[in-house]
Image (cartoon, rainbow, N blue to C red; front, side, top):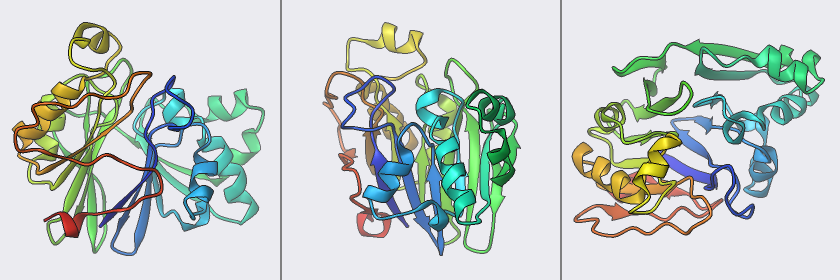
Length: 249
């Protein structure tokens, strides 16, 4: 299993960071997680294209996680590909595509709605891996995802969330937790107001989940400050640079 970050920023972060988006390579599949603005550009820069993606997981309907889906649909239709997309049930793709003036491109989206649940639920399963999801603590309905090889390797992505027991439970047994870090220590009140976590809270969730590695993502204007990791290994994500889960064990 490999993780390739495409972008690591939040909605209003430095544009060089890009919106947080990830490719997970597992088995013979490639899974794209979240598709904010310029995701197609990030895919191409990192050497991928939309026809090489098997699934798209959308965590929630905020623009920095979904606005790029329309561009992916345009390119997918140009190569005759259908996009299998999973996301929260409240995502209204017909309204989005109509507002953008391209309702005809919705035909390439095969959308699978997911109901919110505080308990991990399997949303996709095949012969080599499964995907589980739980609801997070954000300002709109949002999902965290766990991608797990059937041989045991797994990674959990928190999506946008306040500190959440749901996410902590989902990540148990995984090698890597990819967790949002929208604020630094001392900004807890402001971070929680907007449905986000601080770096120190992400470290605490990783510790309580028992993961070995934490990858912080979704930075805003300030650079993330990570301290007192106390046994948690921090992986700083670099766009286009793969992280091989097998090599972390």
